[in-house]
Length: 204
Image 1 (tube, rainbow, N blue to C red):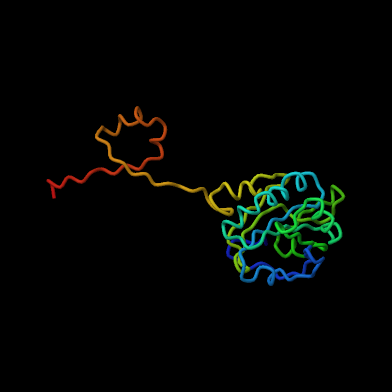
Image 2 (image 1 turned 45 degrees about the vertical axis):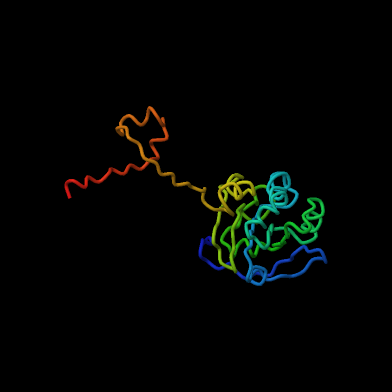
């Protein structure tokens, strides 16, 4: 069963690429007491992952930090040697932490593995992004197969907060024309208006 909002992330040992070298980390400890944006992808050095997914989060790192994010992490089913080389190639230092899920243990524990055997890739991870607050999944966006639409950094930023819903504004105004004449004034926007009929105090 795939993980869902409100669940605690599984506790799995991964290899983290850090400024001081590769270190073994527990996913629970990594997220403990922090707000973490975690995004997963099928593989390091693959086209979409290298050209768009990871670079997007590297570019937007400062904006995520401004939203209160403590850590941005990228996880992939690759060994830590590959992830270390990818980190250097993508210049992620100080912006995104790369986590190597070499045996796909985390992908399976999340219920989000990807069967890439038909492409000679074995078991990989589905593409997704999540907001994890003190080890609890608060928001989750999982891509449909072969898609890259809902888990990008730009999508997360522009949707009104980290993987949040679009911001909505409440605008109140008074008019003195019949409701049926309003489309002439406001056009199609009247579809999203809520009408409040004035109360006739003379009948109370």
